[in-house]
Length: 400
Image (cartoon, helix red, strand yellow):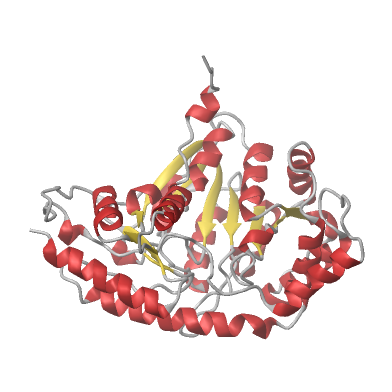
């Protein structure tokens, strides 16, 4: 008999990875599944970034690196933070990780004690609560409202803070909603945190460059410099540079916190991949215009998907400020039955119906702590998106 730890039994499998795997499995069986679940761009990594990795490989840069990242990459991160965010950091305040997910995981293990509370606005990225639980912390979920753009209001933050609060998580732009806080909205949250000096901020900025309609990403430290000594910035190259498989993330913050997070990494993954680090140097230091065609295409896809969803009876979709997701409200479809007689009670039922009967894979909102909603990624070609919207409309109209 296999005896599992109580810790791992608290953790749910990643719904997004499960949906993606199921879609791939059905495709292997010959099904024409359109995958709207994956959180990765369909664009190739820019050529100059790939060439940097090729050069590193040819130069024999294939050995262990310092566990916290190579000096060149730390320098590139420092330059990026100054250029894009107007923030100044030193090399000992930076930790290079194997993807952005590991940055949050290291932070949780290094900085949470049993019972420490982490405020997480819902809808949330699926891994925030589970990584908190692995570290023996306690997720405190703050339910945001569709009418408020899925953004946590200052009074909600104030009401959630207790003496046990250790962190508040701010993910802007958001996965799964695409909601992004303006500078004024960030300042309002910062005003609340000014009154609670024991509360730290985990600022997940992984989608910062993927924004639309002239929106400008703002880090909370930019509007509230007093928070710099209690903020961990979490970022990486996966989304903006279409480098999901390269697995390079980074964490930035006070050096004692970063040192502690580095200890976790030393005893787990050690260093990030050597040649991927060289590629990340090229990404962060090179021509930033390489992102623009991808972001332009995402903007066009967003406009189409939002318009198409809002034309379907029973569905309403906000227009997100950033990321490559939409999070439509499918409440108007609840309580109805499929042509096979299956009753749709929640987002999971709808996702199952769409996958098994319409061959469209998306992620139920329950995975992100919010029903009745679903997450749709528009990080795939327009032809697929057009067909997917047709299938979703057909499904909605067939429900009775």
